[in-house]
Length: 202
View 1 (cartoon, rainbow, N blue to C red):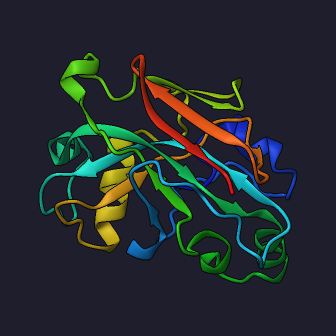
View 2 (view 1 turned 135 degrees about the vertical axis):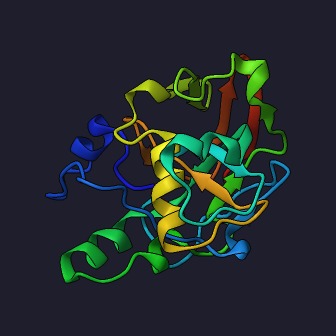
């Protein structure tokens, strides 16, 4: 999801405002970076940014699901890093072009090896906190209650346009604090007191 935390939308300084409806884009399965494998900075960008996000895994087939019933479509959550070629994204925005090149490149979606049952985290997806560290320093703290669009609103909205299938992953947006990565960095991210992501940048 794009611009789903108001403070993050403001920090981009690209003229974009908080959207009136959810804004989503797709990443291919080749974008997945699993098992805390290292992320290799691609040669085609001089400014790759991290964006830590809560990730919801869909557990049933869903099409045009009403928001009231969207909570039935997931029961566990994890964390992910949406790597973005920010320089390429600025160019795309300026020219009104799609974002696939800057968002969907190989291994641009780091995914936690573990997903936690929502019941173990209190049961309310809109009352979760997560944080991301870069080289031991906290760079992002997310509170899902601060989302512009709730998880259920996102699930319902996306299902209007495309069928959600078992195993589909929804990255729900990033809080303020995004920034660049360089070779030698280490990223760690926690949810519910558990470290779910811990990998190096190369």
